[in-house]
Length: 401
Image (cartoon, rainbow, N blue to C red):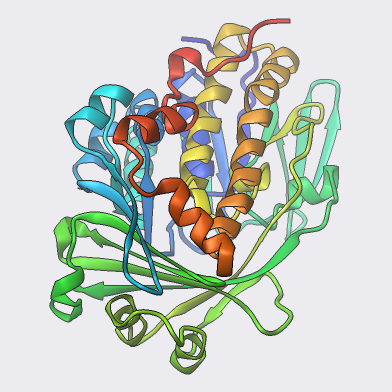
């Protein structure tokens, strides 16, 4: 166990999945941690998320893998159909052969259940304290540490700052100042009770229906008692990054012409949350003195790779490992942390953009996509996914300089 060389805490901006994972990784290395969350209480919003084997590797390294496993739904396959004719495009079985290949399962889970699993791990430690209703607005540094100022003008001192403050990161704005890249893609999300979900779509699978300029996703949650429904389309109007209440009429207007089987999904939810999506261009540097970025603050991405939460937890584990191997030397540890993460997370951001294009193909491009994946063997899919799902704590650090 690496113990801090000073009694000052490590400051973490943000109490979401990335912030809690960072706090847990730091506490596990012997650091005292202060977590600042701008909401009035520590919690999470959202709907379902997908957890690849790499996410379970990260949660195991953080000590909360079993908690999350007890709350997850283990699906039998990842499956993609063409939304126009309902034909099968590709299928990736996620059973015994998948687990043997990657050392962990594939699962779907409510976002709140991931957050709760991490929060329970943090609460089991006596090293982490929370300040809610507190938003970091400014960062100062000297040769020995970091001082942050909150929205009330109160100042807090720490030996380092982890900016896990999400897609609108104040820490990133201060040190990088780059604009968001609004995609024009709009995502509607809802959770539907099993009793209201079409029986002919009640599959134990993460299912994607790929259509022209749109796609639909559904999978079971919470023991199969609920289903997550996600629909994405290219907006007809200029969009600004953010979350609003959705309109049933709007979402229905975008899915004319798709097959009746997936079209059922559009009519299900009584209420939708509407996300106008964005990402940022990958950057070559996350660490600035004793401040660094983590999770969506470091590499905001679109949802097409289903890896946002997974990457944040990987970041946290890697940060803890970098501090461990460098004995608490922050300068060397933060350099190793960013070198270990930048190319991998940039690959996620760029791959996600490309997957969005492939899912939404139309015309001849749609036919090419379907030909590319139709009939592909599970083994070939596994080989293609090795770079993503094969991540483990034992190999997370970049080679030393």
